[in-house]
Length: 110
Image 1 (cartoon, helix red, strand yellow):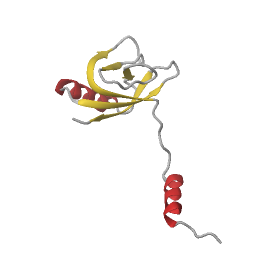
Image 2 (image 1 turned 30 degrees about the horizontal axis):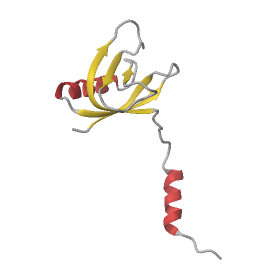
Image 3 (image 1 turned 120 degrees about the vertical axis):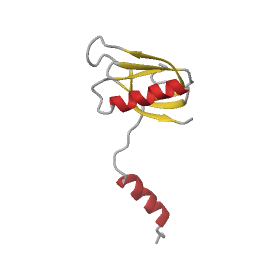
């Protein structure tokens, strides 16, 4: 009879019981090079961020967030603060139906 490895059982339980995870389509990193605020129509890539780092999302160095996003104001405030202070950031993004990169999470790390 084979001996049960309790660390392996614990690791498997943590993986299966940890709840849903989110897979990002791209991670943009570095310093914000430019920002754009667009007011053409609702949900038209309302606030866009262009990065100077090497990270990409679907081959692009920019991502956007729409005003309709639940945390739009906090995300935009964080991005503008990072731009003003020239802080390095990570932008975690998912691809929308057209292949553009939608901001899902922002981390300021310096």
